[in-house]
Image 1 (cartoon, each protein chain N blue to C red):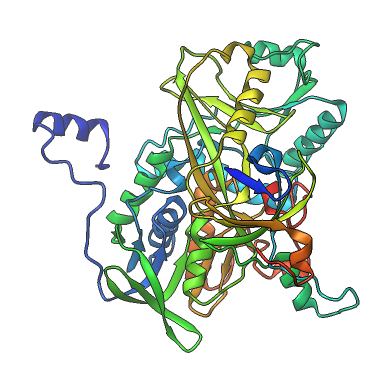
Image 2 (cartoon, rainbow over the protein chains, first blue to last red):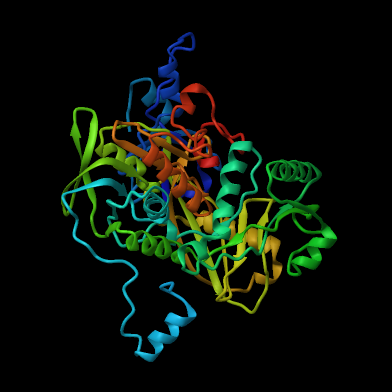
Length: 92
Length: 419
């Protein structure tokens, strides 16, 4: 599996560290909604197909990436820096 | 007379082996059953067997989308053990080992359970302390555990690099003598035949495509071979849990599917007579009866439903086995493959009634499903038959995540790739 880092270009899987599902949103830290916290901490969509996920280019530029990857074929559909997409700008 | 015995072997030899019955029938699905089990792997077949054998519930169908035992029951490294730390785990897995000890007799089918021992190597004083603590917990829970010094390990496993210059010098090791290996396919076939002879319909090439519902209640399944109704539907589909629950309208669940690879080398003369695990990384290996070294390591560390992995993990596992056994460095690898693991959020399984009325769920086996097969089937059958959990699976509820009652052996928290 090759992941195209926006800074470094296509690099080997071994350089990256997997950070998991990117669709979760943390509840307001002051929230006491236990169901919302349960969902954030434990519930996963775990799709068979395109999966939005975070990776870090830990063995390279150390950027956090938002990757859309197919869990059935390991094909990578898109790669983008995680930060702008979180701010509502460019999305992967 | 038992179906398989020295006498039946002789009788069939005299008649040219023409009278053997197939180990299970190939029935067409009937329109309705008392219980449907989705998933014809080890756990599903064991569940059907114990429903029939322990609870007298024989109007049961096991639905398998491929051929019988084509999933993880045929893709594991065949290790059976109960060397756990937490009381819930010790109770459950030690019960499983006890079932294994009698399984060939119970099923009249040789599952080749070989109690050759599992040896966990420790490579630092801290790791040694942790293993000794675990051994004490195992003994306290009624199981067996022995601490071996480096000298004792040298006599038991001659090929290991026990030198002080090893990358991770060995300090000692925890041995569970009752642990070992079994013939994985035979487990599926033995349970299948036992269930079939008691009246269970095992229906292969029958994929579940949806659930029949009456309001919230599950009343059966739609399949590629038509609709089938049932009062109770049990789901035991391991790595496909997410996909099957999606069919029931459950979008999120405390499971991630990950790929785990396993490897077999070319055959050798007898080299190692127990299961050995490497504590300097993560590797478990044994030698099969055919002579090949069977071994595996960690997950590939990313969500996957593909039954194949990538090369970085292969390289990692190979470097670990060479660190343990320098003499295997020139061996050729014969085969490698991947299986899809249902990694739960605390590393422990879920065996429960629900999450919908009429549905029962058995999943979250992480790497450890094979050894659990008998106890999992036993507990799941109990839960389905009595509508309440057996004492051994009561802690493995789905609600434990909401209640904060997780059973986290490794202490990694809700990070499934690390369990």
